[in-house]
Amino acid sequence: MRTLNFIGSKRTIGPMLREALVEHFGPLGGVTLVDAFFGSGGFTLAVHDLFGDLRLNDLELFSYAVAHALFVQPLDMSGVGPPIEGGYVERTYSGERGFFSADNARAADAFRAWARVQPPGPARWSSVGAFLSAMDRRANTASVYGAYLKRPMPKSLVPVELTPLYVGHAGGTVTITRGDAVDASMAAPPDSLLYLVRPARSARPSCA
Image (cartoon, rainbow, N blue to C red):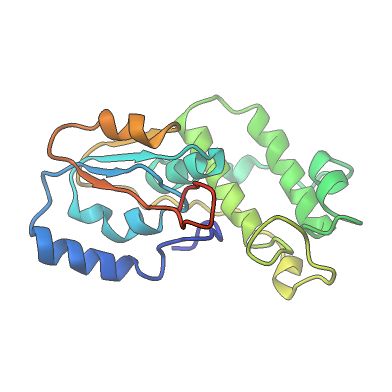
C-alpha cells in the first residue's frame, strides 16, 4: 500500500517488525495497538491484523487524514466534478511554481470544491486522505516539499487518479486522534502495546 512519500516511513521494514512482534510476543489478538506517531502508516499497515483495537495518533494533519483513509470507509468520490481552471492549487502550486502540472492542479481544485460541500466527519477525512496521497504521487518534488524540481518528473505529468485507500480492520475498533503522543499514549487502556519512534538526534522532534 503506497500512501504519502514520508521521510522515515516504515514501509520497507514493516514486514521485519511484524516478524519480530510475533516472535517476541506471540498472539496479540486481544491487545490494543497504540501508534502514537502514525506518520504515513507503514508500521500499522504491516501489523494491524495481529491486534485487537487500534489507537492511531499524529500531530500532523495530513497523517490524521491518511489514517482515516486507510481505516475508515470514504465518501463516494464519483461526484467530484471536472477540472477547474484558475483555482487556488493551480494559481499557487503550478506554472512558475512547478509543484504540480497544470492539469493535476486543476483536478485538485475540483476535489477541493467537492470536499467543501460534503458533510464533516470521518468519511470526509478518509476522502481527503486519499486525495492527499494521490496528489503526493504526482508531485514534482524529490521526497520533500521544500522545493519543486526545475524540470518536470515523468510521474508528475501522469494524470492524478483519485482512488480510495481503505483497507479496514477486522480485529476491533479503530480510534484516530490528532494531538500529542504522550496524551495519546496515556489514554490507552492498560496492557496496550505502544509503538513509538525516536527522532534522530540531529533532527528536531517529528513524526515518523
